[in-house]
Image (cartoon, rainbow, N blue to C red; front, top):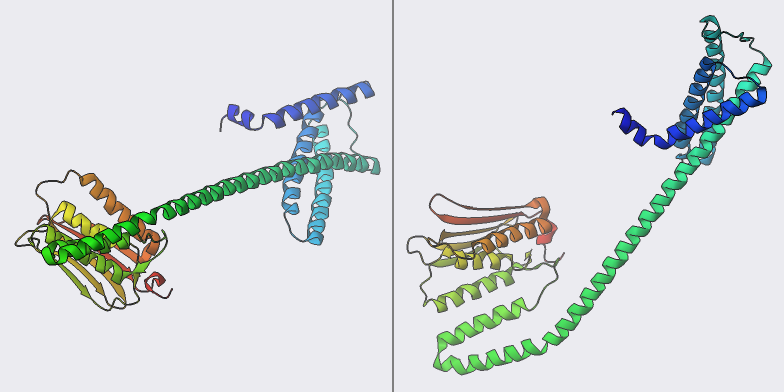
Length: 368
């Protein structure tokens, strides 16, 4: 650290000590009508400054102790040691100055009561200043803590108010939306009943679409899990819709092994993966069957998808990557380190995703 940085950091300290020393030297000199020699001033004020900051450091540490009695004993002890050390060091400095001829005037070196009282007074004088300095610093620190706490409280209140506003808006939107889904499902039910005899395939498509929309409109909370069996049922509806739309030309299979009763999973993750297969993959490939495989062993839940990649890139490729990244973020938010999620394209131009969740994660339990 260079001198300019040091000065900037300790500028107030340097200026304060400079003003104090100049003031004291001139006041004492005018009172005594004589001034001391530079060596005496330099060594004396160096010791005084050293005592000031030593006491400040030790005193501040002592104040942080919890027990009042222990704190008091520590303060008394360090103060006594500081005074004793000050007297000893100042006396030997006095001897040093005398016998090294750094001063020209005679300097008494008798270690008597008068000298000891002078040093005790001088040490207590700077210890008192140091104690006041510590209380001022702690006062500023406490004020900063209070201001930070008030700021955090204000931020929390603003966030709480924003959440309450969002909740009110969501409730209002939900109440307004009740009419539309009710009307929509009644209309779909009417169309289904009318089309069932005339166009059975269209009726099946309407029924699958109705069930998927009903599931989507449940809108679980962001941190809420849903039964995995319900997600699997929606995948079946989605596959059936695409079969009907393409005249049963897709080559796709949904394979579920293990008892999924009691297993919960984040909503719409599996549907996102399957929808990506239809949007960005070739699910009509005659040689490579598109596969959605869900396996639950009681120790691990695994979800595996594989499909050929479209030779003609989709215009929504960017949204595909965003969807996959969102799936990864949601999985890690729910399961942390208990989940692995891999997705890649292999040399055979097949796109593969694989999710593995360890059973020791309590989020897999329906009764949680």
